[in-house]
Image 1: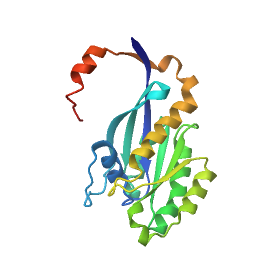
Image 2: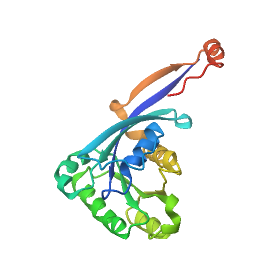
Image 3: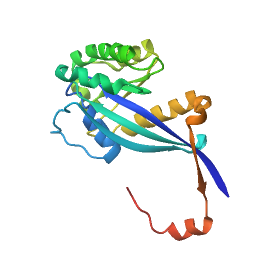
Amino acid sequence: MSEEYKSVSIKVVLIGDSGVGKTTLVNRYVMDTFDPFEPPTLSGGFRTKEVVIEELQTKVSLQIWDTAGQERFKSLVENYYKNAQFAIVCYDITIDESFDSARNWIEEVKEKAPDDVQFYICGTKSDLNDQRAIQLVNGIKLAKEYNALFGETSAKKSIGVNEAFEQIARNYVENNENNFGADERRETVQLDSKKKKKRSGKKKWC
């Protein structure tokens, strides 16, 4: 017996002011690590991770580009917007200025990225709720204004991180399922019950 899965790649760029936690967010998602002393990203970084959406029979390869938030790298960061399907716009829930900048980042991406780019508005450092400067409702309002997805995350506590990226993958597949066309690559997954039984006692973790 075999099941046929679609294989789809999504280019995701993380944007936002320096220090809002873009790199720690990616590291928590891809490697399940957290470094409170993570140095600022210079230019950009790249990670990948696969998400399997069983009910949609789709394997999604998330190609995640972490960008620098400093003004001096702005011209370099703009290159990462090209061919992006999703932009995660990060702001620190404890810093007003980072939320004010979010709108500017969105407008910049809309100007440089493809017309059909989608957004995920992400309030970071939700574990610092006692220091909160940006209320949840403000993030939701901004997301509604740009027809974007929204969530708050804590890379330190690993809250909402996996859900954010999985929501992006699922949203993209559901909205573009009929547009994959010739670009989609199909893989056949052979389900060998005997092999599955033999392997059931030994699990490998990545």
